[in-house]
Length: 152
Image (cartoon, rainbow, N blue to C red; front, side, top):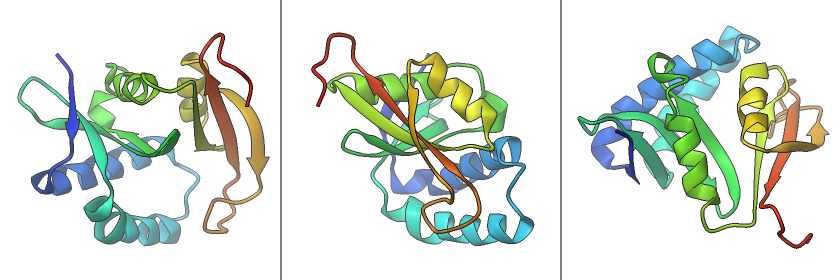
């Protein structure tokens, strides 16, 4: 059984672990220096301040988290041991529930991430040469639009 709830302060260590295992499983393109730099920012700045949703198992242990700004998914990470179980899908469905359009950026060098979103109906609508911090990791811009929704 999967429940979705707001992250709590006592989830921080687990969310850091979710991020770490997820990135190690899917972001093989990161240099060790960039991994360490990003990990420090995630641990000290992003996770403590972000209003995250977590997907928890039957023991209320977070297995995945999602951060969003309105209809844009800023972050979605699933613990490496929980990939393919449906935690990520449930979080995305939760965000899409009351929206006609949802966007997300995914690293071009992360084919499993791109495939995940495409299986959920997202399509590539743009690309940037670098990540949001100017690192040499191209981003694909993806968008999901509810069937029958008006084009903006």
